[in-house]
Every structure is written in C-alpha cells, then in structure tokens.
Image (tube, helix red, strand yellow):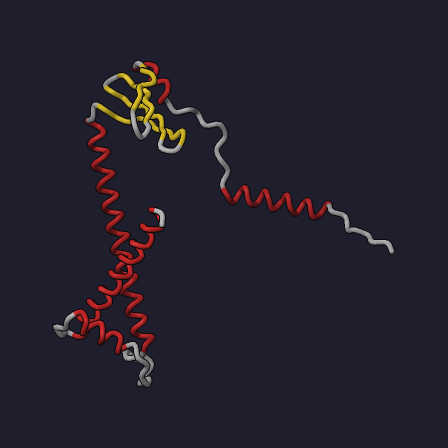
Length: 189
C-alpha cells in the first residue's frame, strides 16, 4: 500500500470514527441520561430497528435514525473542513509575517526531476541559484541585485486567456458548421 492510499484509508477511518462519536454524542444529549458509549451505541442501534409508524414524523423509525446519523456526519465534516481552513489561514499569515523580516527567502523553485529541483534564494541583496537533491545542495550561480530584479519583474501578458464558456461556444459553433457542410451520402444499388 503506497503512502497516498494509506493516508486516504486513515483519513476515512478517522472521519467515520468521529461520525460515530458525533452520533453517540447527539443521542446522549437527546436522551439526557448518563450512559456509557457502549450503552449509547446499543440504544442507537436499537433505535434503527423497524417499528410501526405512529405518525407523519415518527422519531422511532430507522429513517429518522439515519437522518440523525447523516446530520451528525455533515456537522462533523463541516467542523473538520472549518478547522483545516482556519489552520491553513493561520499558517499562511504566520509564514507571510515571517518572510517580511527574513534575511533568507526562497524566491522561486522548479522541479527538474524526481527529488531534484532548482531554487532561487535571496540572501540580503543578492540571489543565488542552487540545485537541491536528496544528498546535497550545490551552488550553481550567484546573481547581483540588478540581475535579480530583472528576473523577478512580471512579464507582460500577451492576450488574456479566454473563458471556458467562450471556448465551448466557439467549439460548438465549429461543430455545427461542419455538420451543415456535410453532404448526405448517397448509396447506389
């Protein structure tokens, strides 16, 4: 099992575990009793057994238990994504604040092969181009402040890229034209 698959399996197991815990918590909060997790899980599973319907909103039906479970799952997933969003936001702000005062800054990096990359690093007013592999970091060249400024100036964009809708319309128009130009095939016997 490769690393990505292992991560996916672990993440799925964690999400399902948190969903079950959320279901147990919502069931415990609704019952108002102090039950253990096993007793609560048993109660939830017992709630899922079919019972005769007593009205339009029957809270003892298995559909109601499934809806409760799905709503708890949605809340837990929303909380996870919200937490990840906040964590990412906080880490980005911290990195941005640290990069403004730093004497060392990675300006740009480009991968040239597996586990091999080139990095342009600014040190003070100069920049150095280094090659990075698993075993070593090698200095390739050193640039002064003028050369660095020339490299980092944004290049003027040619024509702006077209939107997907515009490209789709143009393509469908071409296809319609091709269909219109096509002559019906005559089969002679």
